[in-house]
Image (cartoon, rainbow, N blue to C red; front, side):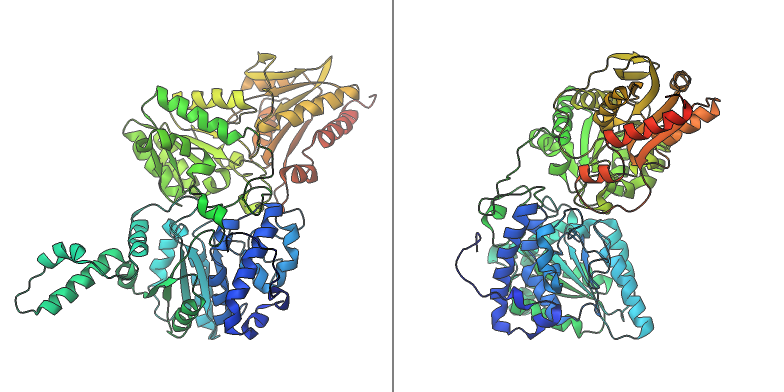
Length: 637
């Protein structure tokens, strides 16, 4: 099936309101169900955007898992969770897909509030095996007789946390745990690393039937004295199989290995999972799948195989239906190339996301200066430290939410050694449809506490270019830039003046309010200042640009106003405003202060604009609150 069809087909999905209905379906009708689910997914996701490629690849796999196991009694944990759309359909949520990833609608990841079949909202990679190991240990303690199934992609399997879990899983022969490796050779981009090479070798020659040319060198290395020609050939084939297959690797850990299995063959999948279920201990089932299976646009997308279109697209061609804007990521990508051309010491690292983080363009020009380390943010950070120790200037490009995972490495491996590493955090602040696990709202609070780390928040394309150039020129310690998702302001927000180490973006008449604007919140702050002036209140809007500290000059400047406020799209606790308020107290500045930031709570998914409105980070809400506060400061106004 290469595209949606208009011909009549059996509505098998309508008969499935829960996994119990799936188990009643005749086996010979399962392929028709799989085809129907694919058509449904393409049509539904084309209206909202979402993770289409990964889910088209796990249709048969998810059907087989729910036929063999008894969810929710047998927990099914998906890693990274974006491949759970088929699971949602089979557990009775097909009628919710018209609101996929929209405010108040169906989430794009497993969610405990949606269904008892969803155990964890595990949308950060490489976590499923640890969750599953804990659940399986509990099943042993309770003697429940239940099994636990963890579905992990080959990309997520590159993460260190997955291997920590495997080390512990292999130590328990009694764990009722089935690990399904969904091997499609990719995460966002093709999977990298030694494990990927082993898996790729297996995918390329799944029959293990070596040709004579392949066997020649290996046969010559085998002592044949006392062996028949047959035994020599058999030994050679076994040696080649071990060289290609990860079976030996997993078996050496003590895990039963089943595979490789055709991940789109329902019969083969079901048989393998039944065997694994009855084994009585931890088993790894290796399923070979194709990301975007059954849809031509995904197969044609060599870079990401339609991993996750962010907006509506044509279900036939896969073309986006949303107008293109210049994005923050594009500006960074151009700046990275520009700086790398000028300085041969600059190299880039990313964690399985060269395209989404903007380093892919540099990789095309200078492939030897870009390192994709797989889903391994901790390793990326300390590897960057090693590069810096050797005289290079590494640029680590990671989504802000994923950088949380490497805080210890930034703190102790980079900053404590005062190494010149630049971290570029894409998708900072409230990012929208992916939900709370993907919001980059903690980075300001977390990394501003790192000694010696200089942190910038660009407000537009021009300041991103300038601040990135300043960052890679820094030789005495680490630097960090953060910017949000989406398009940059159409026009650069040029400074009117520089005052007390601050960019002055707006100068009102007879100002009594000083408003600190952090990074991409500049348009909100500027519009809020205009609304304040309509209320008769003059305001000055300033941008500190580098937000890792608050200077004494800025604090003394604040003392000249009746009211000071700050606005940022990070968590209030530990953010810039929090630090500014503390600095004002330290210097004895008693001017009333307002801190507009993201509240410390879990915020549901929706568009960035919807969420900013909900939490009061809009020009209208900010200006109204400041005006009300100002009246208490000066009751005559």
